[in-house]
Length: 239
Image (tube, rainbow, N blue to C red):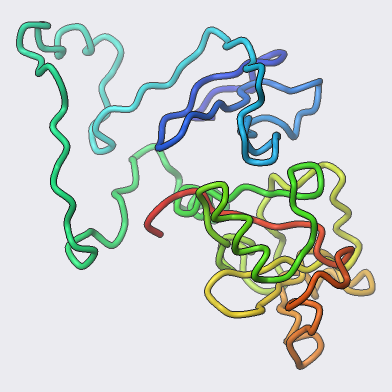
């Protein structure tokens, strides 16, 4: 967390973006894997009726290309009289004029594949507890879009490539020694093994069609839901 150690206890902080959300800076119910989990991600993509009490921490972002040291903030801030009443909203531009990718803030360590992929896609794991029932590929696409995300590409599932480990942050009930398939964005009825076929770790991050030489019929229906227990939705726009 930006160079900080995990905070003690349950500590929630607000997250900026197109919709309201909160992130765990400490541990939820003493579960260390909950650090950096979002509140909507822990509640089927929705905010609960009773919002948690916020902790004493908040992270504010300025220009991503400029780092302002704390001792410089007071001197660099303009007087209140010079601030505009509101930030003007720019006119929408055609997609062809948009940049290929947002500039990477200097504090992001892009040499770490997990960090780089996490920043690029904003991937969040979901399972039964978060509302994913293991339906068809079309169901998976609808599920991610319903929470204002989209199906993650292969790179987001497998930042280290084929036969490598999957993206961390998966549900605590996840059993990697079992065969599990998750839907991959960008290709119809494409599924990647996020577990292990017959206990072989080299089968992790291989497509179903690579392991069986055909596309799965169950990928088009709700059949074999136990093979489709986990899904990764990417919440960052414009990737």
